[in-house]
Amino acid sequence: MPENHPVDVVVVGGGIIGLAIAWRARERGASVTVLEREEQTGSATSHVAAGMLAPVAEVEFGEAGRRLLELGLRSAELWPGFAAELSLAAAMDVELLRSGTLLLARDEDEASELERQLDFRRSLGLRVQRLLPSRARDLEPALAPTLRLALEAPDDHSVDPRTVMRALRLACLAAGVHVRERSPVAALELDGDGGRVAGVVLEDGERLPAGSIVLAAGPWTADIAGLPPEASVPVRPLKGQILRLRDPRGPGLITRVLRFEGGYLLPRGDGRYVLGATMEERGFQALPTVGGVQELLRDARELVPGVDELEIEELSVGFRPSTPDNAPAIGRGAVEGLIWATGHHRNGILLAPLTAELVAGLLDRSEVESPNEQLLAACNPGRFLTRVPTHAGASA
Ligand code: GLY
Image (cartoon, rainbow, N blue to C red; front, side):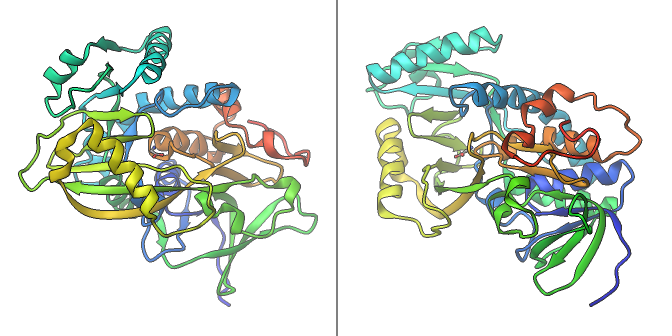
């Protein structure tokens, strides 16, 4: 077992959250190692994600939904700058697809829901427009004539998460982050009285001491041993089936993201489309199902009959990391030196820039007070913990 020198920060998980944090922490001067369990970073949840930057569309009702919305709106503001900086750091283009989104209703119930969305978005000061079906079909002629109502949300954009993940890996390597793939973590190591993290133990027995550990293992967070239940954030996998489609005739079938009850159809701008996604409480059941795919195709074909001509390039299953209230857990918990960055549910891509900023700020020992206190309160892991933290600033 090699004797390793401690690094400042070990990030467990090389998805979009882990790599974005690693890059930002390294930029602030920390020595950082990322441990990724798969062959390559970004090959699990982030690889399957569609990449919508839509803070309102996927929030749920209630208190946790309000907190998630606050985080999502802030992170959406950060995305253009994040993409531009990442493009420079990785020496490759990370473009936001500024297509805007149409929200679609097929019947009266869905139309009432859109009216509610319209009021809600307006109350937040977001740009939104109510469109009669004829106007929506002027904008997107491929829409079916049976459409009942549409809203245009011109600022709901998207990115291609696979491009972002390639860029983040390059940016991390260029900055000097040590990226270790095929390195699954078995457990956290705590010091004698269990009040502080000392490092991690890999599945092959190797120990890596670290000043701070960031748990960004997404839906696999619960597999990492070493923490008592009262100091652990519960994270469950939420299965999603998703199709990647291609138009052999090239781009143009639709140009905006389309959202509808139960799914979305997202153009990549080059003749490729992402059709997603199911939401299934089935643990880590990794196989796609006839019912799931049929559900996605039925809705998309009803709204855009031209989907029939698209080729199926890929059918994949992903696992969103979800907490009991479906809002993320970002920040310190009950064990000193351990920072949670997990539970991003349907919003991992959207929330990556903000999560990275929040966590890098907490890791930066030169920062006396976090300027993001209010945002950290909105995703405080402490809401799930029953052990009282003993260290200063635990709730920040
Ligand atoms: N954010 C896309 C999804 O969860 O399906």
